[in-house]
Length: 125
Image 1 (tube, one colour):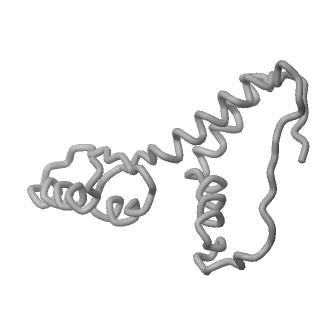
Image 2 (cartoon, rainbow, N blue to C red):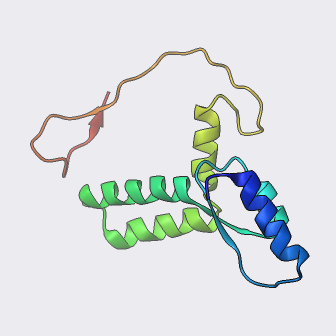
């Protein structure tokens, strides 16, 4: 459900009726997770999970053993996606404590070394 306020009202209504059912709500950008959790929903962080799955597939394509990739992905999920949340907070101009970060500095372009296949290559700046 894309409208977090509506989802929160629905969850509140369900809980207000005394219905004890699990309610799963997807969160695209993670902005309203706390309110939804407080209302009694279980939140599925769709945007974070998509990013994590994408990274996992990329690591497997780079010949990282799937068992090692899955172990790391499971660890990140167990941490409630904390490494991804910290990354996105920093990218959106917030330091880890939620404070604005210094926007100075330089942009960097990262590209893979030129080879027909990414396997066995390293990332170079």
